[in-house]
Amino acid sequence: MSQSLADQLATTALSGGNAAFIEDLYEQFLRDPGSLEPAWVNYFKGLQGSGVEIAHGPIRERLLERAERPPVAAAAPGAVSDGASAKQGAVSRLIQVYANRGHLIAKLDPLGLSERAKPYVLDLQYFGLSDADLDTEFFTGSRNHAIPERTTLKNILRDLKFIYTDTIGAEFAHVSDTEERLWLQDSFQVGRMQQRFSVDEKKNILWQLTAAEGLERYLHTKYVGQKRFSLEGGDSLIPLLDDLVQHGGKGGVEETIIGMAHRGRLNVLVNLLGKSPKDLFSEFEGQSRHSPPT
Image (cartoon, rainbow, N blue to C red; front, side, top):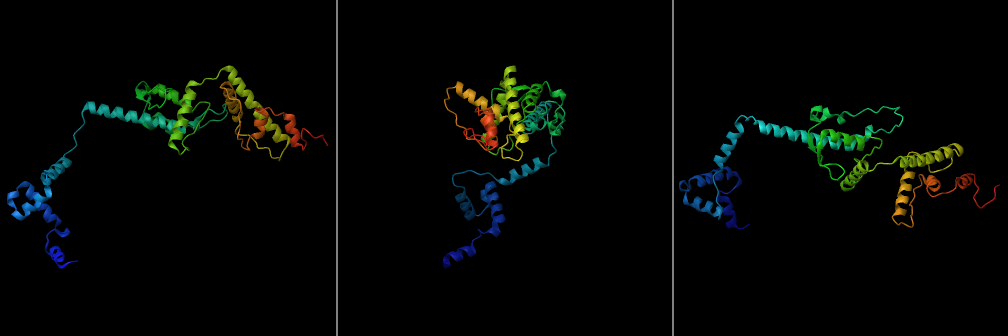
């Protein structure tokens, strides 16, 4: 460090310890430049450049006075607006909670033998809503055409219960990818609101589920302990794959390749691809279709 620079730093008033003093001088300059020595006036003018500043002190004083004033009661129209906003926020949270938790009370027992406790977070009262709000219209925040953008709370509840708490339950909260989760949720909503199975379609689905369950039970009873890649718990895979193949065929698909997992592969071979149960049982007994019985 040169001696001249050291001398400058030793004699200058522009140091951290003088910050409050210099700030007061600047405030004085903004209020009345003529009250300062010419050297300070020239210095502060050089800091301003082409901009225009006003003294900060009076502004801080007014802000402090405003903060110390007692709050003014809101006018009636504003209160109504705030109340409506609060209700709308509550309805938005209600819709989100049904999407995340509705599967917990889905009607998955066709005989009604088991009772599922309803989470209190699905009650209107939890969100500050009541039966008096049922005929009030709210925005739904819908991202698809299956659900109207604005409708009454009564209709919103009806649709939410049908989509998420009826005979099909779906859970999306575990999907970490936001885009994927929203796509799944929207597709599920559209399907639930627009797809209605006919009586014949329902009978066909029941027949396929019964066939899948029957094969699993037989293999479990007849060939205890043998590796069979059970489908139990995923029986709906059979009607789902069948519907996919049938619609693909109608759309011109000529070949379908299934990257099949171990789980459920025997059931898929028999109930979807047409493998003979007789051939399957022979293989379990150590006999192939091409070899004579021992």
